[in-house]
Length: 240
Image (cartoon, rainbow, N blue to C red; front, side, top):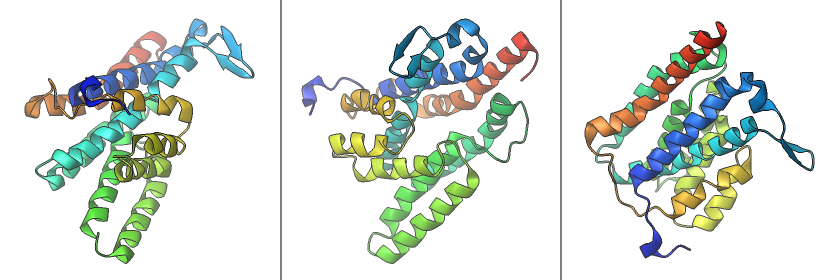
């Protein structure tokens, strides 16, 4: 456990880390994957080949656990949970075209949806779990329905991603079991566990991102950066 006086990262700092690591991951997925020098292996650990591309994708695995942790914090501190959920759904819809373009160069991609849908479903899990806290049967039915929706929707990280978010919520006050159990639910669990290092230094302060402008800029970065990467890709190679 990290002593309280050593905890130096605010919620804003965690948001910045999440944004930067996500940008690195998506840049690798969109741009670096087409550059031979980035794909070239420069070291091997057993059968595992290391390249600039692989390192960037590993760094990118840090983003989702931090976003998930911030989601649980948002649920705890928000004054209007319905509005919080509505904002996630709104940006899920706004991000869908950029998500489709960056992945397949198409406006419509029914087989894959962006991570805001995963965050939205995860938040609904937490809210319904609390709402039906006196009724185990309704809790189970609600979670089952949301699990089926997650499977059918094919949102980023899928059913495992939604389950990961729910485990974050349940084990939030138990950091070591949380890191081990939740990371094992995602691909590249060792890389995902690295996210719990900055999370461990979280000091429960809001930090420098304040007000509606800061909040919505944080949300808007997701669709905007995907559009920028898509147009960079198109400008360099002329195809998606």
